[in-house]
Amino acid sequence: MYYKFSGFTQRLAAATSAAAYSPQKSDGLPVHLKLGYPDRLLYRTTMALTIGGTIYCLVALFIASQPKKQK
Image (cartoon, rainbow, N blue to C red; front, side):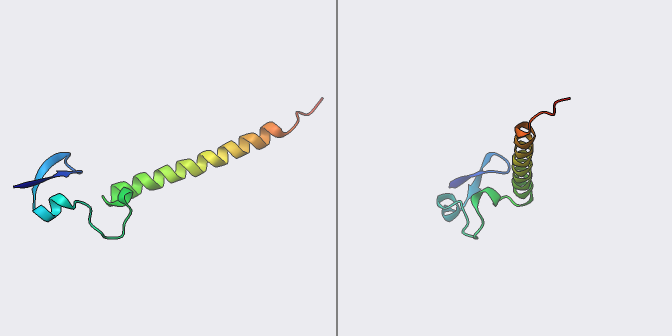
């Protein structure tokens, strides 16, 4: 009997020999998007936070580089 690790349930599940020895399907998707909608949501959230953080840092650098006005 063959087993493979289920990434969804986090347990071992019965499998065929082909599935046990080659768990990744060759469907052209990157490994970080294999589980479908949850992976896409996490990926897009991470990208949005990364881009937002970069923009925030650039704005903060721009504001910090401006001299303070003398009264």
